[in-house]
Length: 212
Image 1 (cartoon, rainbow, N blue to C red):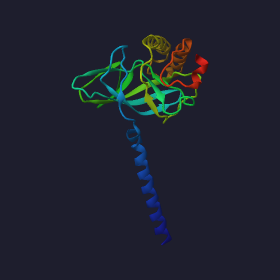
Image 2 (cartoon, rainbow, N blue to C red):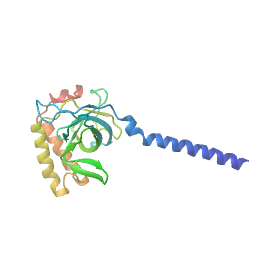
Image 3 (tube, helix red, strand yellow):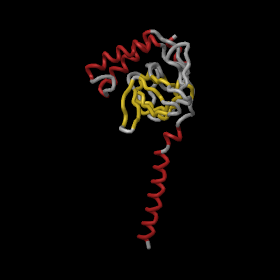
Image 4 (spheres, rainbow, N blue to C red):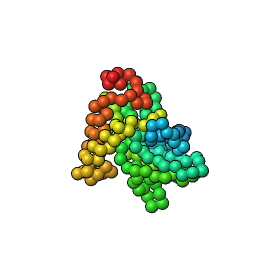
């Protein structure tokens, strides 16, 4: 009887754990925020695309997964250049904001492929993974699971171009922008250019008083 009771208890425990794991596995989709308007990549223009953050994996740099939706009846172009993301919560205590740098990954039938730009078909939603780097050297690092929202604007084009150029140059001998070995070099370039001439961005708080 004891053996049967133990076996029954073990079965119930396993079933509960399995159910729990199933819930965890579904969290990214369930936890994804609602769709927001995608900030236009050119000043004075607008974008028809919508974007939502699914999840973040990393620390001072990592990858942010997003869904990009085209609700229109015409193809729309997407680029990640200049996009950045703001931690949810009190900006006075929040960890670093993160900005997209380099080619992003698009999920397809054969896996993920990297692109600088893609065309999103009418009515389609694309699952994308963006390489992102912290843009506030004076703040603490975010962690995997940190909740982010897309910023209301993009990093100014001049700053974006400067970061991209020096990041690519630093990454070249380390295997390129997509190489894990180049992450540290790229992060250094992001902080260098960001701190050289501070530009106020969405999500500023008292932490930025030292920058003004």
